[in-house]
Length: 196
Image 1: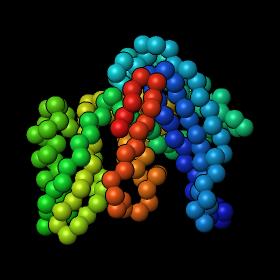
Image 2: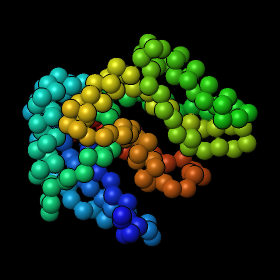
Image 3: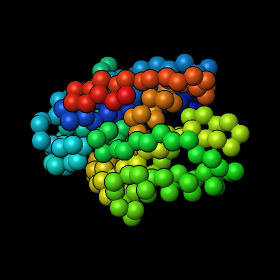
Image 4: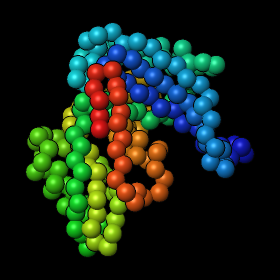
């Protein structure tokens, strides 16, 4: 039994040229501590535009990133994985809805009509940025269900219990605990891409 009142999480960030892992702990007062961090380079061609080309090399690199973590290797098997941004479509919309059920239905309809994927291949999630009366400013994020299954299989092969997250939504959640009152621009400079 754990009486420390701390919550520990492991995050994996996979880009086209690096894999980064970090384990953090949040204590009962909300303070976050970085426990361990590791990274490894990823050979060109293992991922292409966020799609897995060489699963065995990617698995090996993830194991190496876990083992390289300092001051101690990452040992947990519960992880949060950031899906490659090249595999995610984002759309910011304002939706009028009387209740949450109607809002969810309208979000899915918006995804079906504006995202260039077949309806049966849509994996849809969203974050309500601001809600005023029945107007909802919503960040919709969509990825390919088929590609998501491939990532899930990769994590299962590594015996990792993975929760998948989207970088843009995770950034918003991490930077802003309260609803935004004014527009904010977040610029994320990466090795291959820049997201605004």
